[in-house]
Image 1 (cartoon, rainbow, N blue to C red):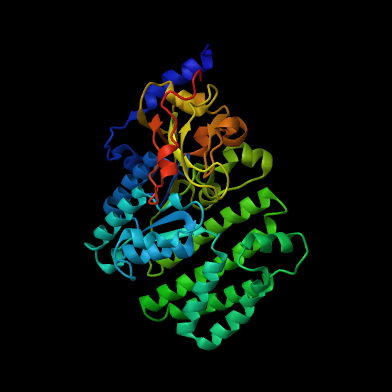
Image 2 (cartoon, rainbow, N blue to C red):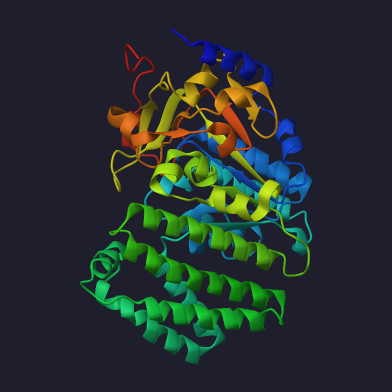
Length: 446
């Protein structure tokens, strides 16, 4: 039986919800965003078609109508920078599928999927109609590409300064004893069984910062190449610390990762604004990174922070945080880390969750404003369960694995709810992915 509190919340939600058509142009969200310079667009899973599609549609409007300068994704810098060159009409890739070839690390479907292809094709075509200085970019915020970023720094220095390249190789050779497995480095150094490479990576970043500062006095091409190399050096420095900490504390490594994302976003803002115009950037990442951690049990009980919190602390109301949610459908996810992609059925949301409350409005697709006043905000301020599906989905332990408590109005500035969703389509579809979706009637009795 529904409580009086839930009944009141439902009435308030139905009154506040702004229904969205299947092909909605998101005019209401554009009005809510206004003149904000940073817009964070989330997702409740890493494998849902509708989340990718709607983020792309919103971003197209932000770029075309509001002059946004860049998309920054929850992906590694060197892989995304290859896409950046493609969408700007540079580089050696003629097709979007080739530009995404750098995303080889699990989970490949997270960025190598049909929705991302459609978006970067659109971005490249739109950029072709713009002068060089108004073309939007595509960048990565994550820090898993330790070895690829070292290679990128060396490649840049080989061309720009062979003597500096020799010094860089001597410093980065510190990692050779650990092989190509970054987690092996973290295990041995974090537990004190081997000396780490902290001093070497810090020295490299200091050198690259000096080089970037000098390059800004030259051409835009020189400044762009130097910034790319500096960012890779920053990633190596932060990834070294991340892997060294990951076997000591989950909270510590999580916080290091999201601080790196915020640091990268700040560096990108400075770079894109180097000619005096303040840039506008849209971020694509999971709700767990973009919803303010202070409004969740991870922040309150575990001491975790995240990118959304750090952006709010820096930008205040000039940042808009948009979450996504769904009640049921299918999702592309794995059963274990490194396992093949499967198309899994998403269980209907729990009766005590935000998602179920959204479902019970009876509105299939809607935007829910969460900034400002409103009776629905009062009704949502009490913590409720919220679902988060990452690259792994385990329906059999869903409560423990995928739900956490959150206060929605403090977590996001707006929420887009799509009641029934389907799995994102990987570029590399195999027979297992095609065969693993469960029947629509599963699970019985839920």
